[in-house]
Amino acid sequence: MHSTLNFNGKIVPAERGETLVDAALSAGILVPHDCATGQCETCRVRVVHGAVEANNTNYGDTVLACQARVSGDATITFDEALPVERRHGQIETIHALSDDVLEITTRLNEPLLHRPGQYAKIAFNGFPPREYSFSAPVGDTDQPDQAIFHIKRLANGRVSSQFGKAIEVGHALRIEGPYGSAYLREAEDGPLVLASTGTGFAPIWSLARSVVKSGSARQVSLITGVHNPSSIYMMPALRWLAENSRANIVLTARSASDERTFSGTPDQHLPSLNNETSIHVAGNPRVVTSTQQLAAQAGARCYADPFTASQGKSGLIDRLRGWSGLSGRL
Image 1 (cartoon, rainbow, N blue to C red):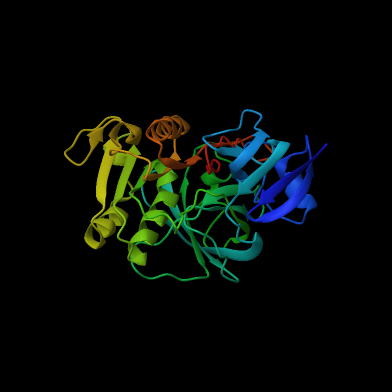
Image 2: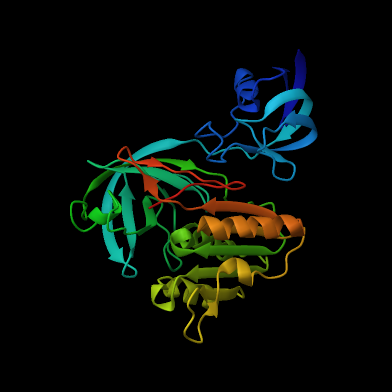
């Protein structure tokens, strides 16, 4: 049985029962997607009019286009994706930000265009690929052919444990991206809440810095959390933010022991939310889920990025996702 779908203003015929991604592709429309299994959340779209069979992927008026199926006429909107491209490069610096967090700076053969909040798939030569969120330098200077990542070093990590050992400065790499839809929406101008735990700070810092450098007048609140105060690795970035903006900055720790930090996790210290607020949250899946729920209750837009560890010998990512979420980067 035939239906009619409107994808971002383009009218296309569709067969009832087929997925929204397949219906779009059949008409030459590329809905951003990656895993096609309902895990990565890259294909989340908004159902403006009509209805679809959501297959339990609905969040507000959004669904996952790779799982949702055509059930009648509908109008669908989504953000156009940047093209996924491949680059080669090498590690330029390996800098320890804390006992267990490294800043890896890479130099690419050509710039890789991406939006703040997105991620890339990286394969260091001789090692399985991993997914890491783009971060940003501290300060005002940007180098287009440079890409920066924050990586938590795990003792048993097949890749992360090898930095400074088998993976050193000068090590060659391949990078593919950008992926993910938890990026900054320039059309939004309401209050912006940025929350993170651990190395979830990488994409959140990229977002915060971008807003400040754009000269935006948006009200910004940044809440970042760690296990304990000794794990705080982002102080230089937070000092830059405090000196260059009016952002409200909150540090949390599960075992707060000094005047710099509040006890608890970022979801417990969010500012007042409403339907004009946009929230970006990255890091611990439990904190991400809690933040999503609070956002939904307040009618706020939420772009989530739960981080989970890579699993198995093949290096596949256990890609738990939330609304507009991404994946783990350990």
